[in-house]
Each structure stands twice: as structure tokens, then as C-alpha cells.
Length: 137
Image 1 (cartoon, rainbow, N blue to C red):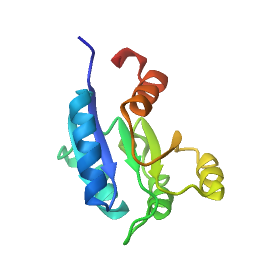
Image 2 (image 1 turned 135 degrees about the vertical axis):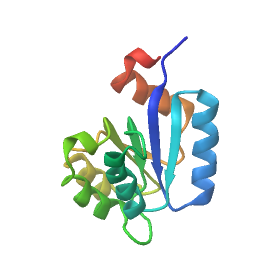
Image 3 (image 1 turned 45 degrees about the vertical axis):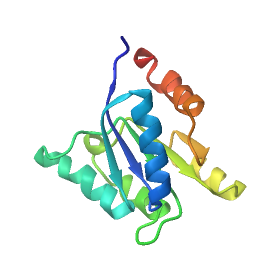
Image 4 (image 1 turned 90 degrees about the vertical axis):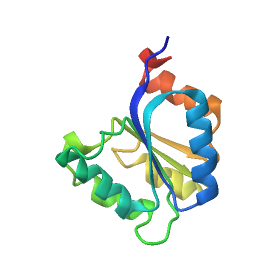
């Protein structure tokens, strides 16, 4: 039996995206806990509330870039200011953007471990797990 991740955090304002990714990740049985945030501010609150033992530390954050309120880029600016103990093991940008400038910009951010186009697939998630969490496959 394979090990499960402790927690995955999906940050996206699109309810359809949340629904699809939630079903996919639950079907794959890869995590103990799956958390949802609707924008960057909600995600930061989730990460900071970990100090109080309210939420588990995510192993993976899947972050959308284009959201109302605090978007993905603004989230990343605030995320890099967090203590390392509050950050996820990996952070992957998942976006509908096919803009090469967005991809290059993301690749230059040290906290970002990948850039994927929506919607995630089993194959893409398995690639991420194999690269960053080989003990979990």
C-alpha cells in the first residue's frame, strides 16, 4: 500500500476547477486531507493558521494565477515572506494561461516547483509525485 500525502491545498476561484480537481485527487487516494481556497488571501490565512494547529501543513499547493481578489502572483509575493515552516514542500502553478511570459516569470520564482496547464490529469499528478515524492508511489 502506498503512503499518502498529509495535505494538498487547491487555490482557485473556479468552482468547476475545484470540483474536477477534488474528484481527481480523491479518486487517486493520494492525500489524507484536501483543502480548498478561493483566492490567495484565503490560502495565506490557511497557511498562517497552521501555527494554531488549525490546519495541516500542505505537501503540495496547486495555485491558479488568475483570480479576483489576491491573484496568484500577489499570493507568491506574500508567500515568499512566510517562515519556511509554514510553506508547503512544493508549490505548482496550475493555470489556463499559455502565455510564455507567465511561464518564464514563474520559473524565476524560487518557491515555484512547476507550471502546469489546467486541468490536471492523473498522469500530471503522478509525474509530480514521482519527481517530488517518490516514496508515495
